[in-house]
View 1 (cartoon, rainbow, N blue to C red):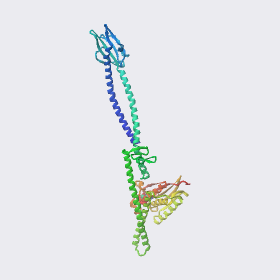
View 2: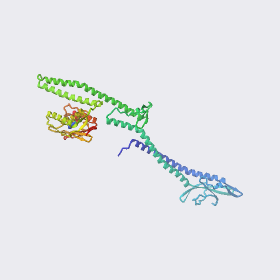
View 3: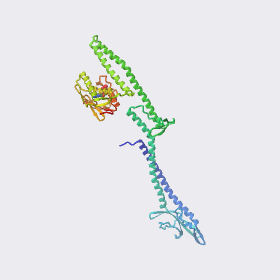
View 4: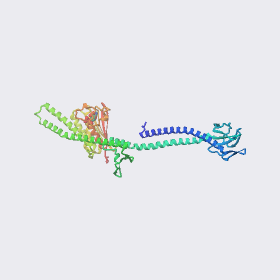
Length: 480
Ligand code: ADP
């Protein structure tokens, strides 16, 4: 299942709590309000009935009713009864069909059909011997209905408010987290291109080519200004400072490798030259001394190779390894390299045979020296890790706008766990099998050369069965 993004999680979280909080608040409010509504309906009824006595007067033994008695004020209907429950004046609401007994000073709830009513009776002494009753009737159902409309309105409004909060919240979170994405992208780019000179650069954004004023930085992608105190700005700055330090450490390490290799080159050349001279002198040396000098010479040669590989890689790291591409016949060059390697294999005396399957007339824009270096590395590895009298196959084919080559051997192969690491510097799958002159730099160079040409390298290998190293390199614009 796809992972939920942080911004969605945050939005869901506060939307959920916001909905929960609003629901709880509304529930409390509604329960209080409905009670309040019923009690205020009762108070209204009582007041209206009590005030209504102003509209009743006794003149010359006759009851006079003011016309206000008939009007329905605050939903209360008034009616006047004598003590025998005889209806005299007033209005009864439509739908109220019952004739409940008089109950002085008491509010009663009366159900009539599917409606409910509050009924309040109050006795009023017109004279010594004459008492009448004022009855007030008001509908609970109507009051509840108007309250229900308010509730419904709130229920429609609530989800809309929650939705609006979610949308606004999501946009806000996205805006806030956009710089985090910028940080992630920068780190990814650094990893992909191994380019430590990249920066997140919140503070480096310029407007119309001018730097931002010093009171803040901004987010280049969203165009949003980042305040200097803001946590994400601080995170970005900290990352940039860390990258600055890392770049400096790498630069110093590269410089050290380069300087050390340069310094070692001369003494190693001197050692080799001296060994040559001693061996050339010849006769005065015993057989044992000749062997010892031969060993020194071989080790010095191995060291010289390693130094040249180190120099190559450190120059590549520093971007000082330009490609001198020219259009060459790759088929011929590959055939030539294979022949040379066959001669070396023959001299080695292990009986290994190199077989070629090379498509003729493949032309490509490559740096000849680098291409030779790449193929020599692959074939010499295949020879080294082959069994006696083994076979090494070198093939080259045209593959659309690119050419693909492969070097296959039937030797010891590489264990699956080691395969991803063989391109790393100084990595050797089985150190014990090397004689010390192979430092594990060859394949790093092969990879760099293929990639510098815009191509790639890969390996397929099975332990005990052999390995196939393949490279695919674009042939250049005017190919074929
Ligand atoms: P080295 O100079 O030690 O050969 P490389 O970078 O050329 O260094 O190779 C790295 C490691 O990959 C080697 O130590 C070896 O273990 C393994 N390797 C390379 N080529 C082959 C091959 N053809 N067969 C088996 N193992 C190989």
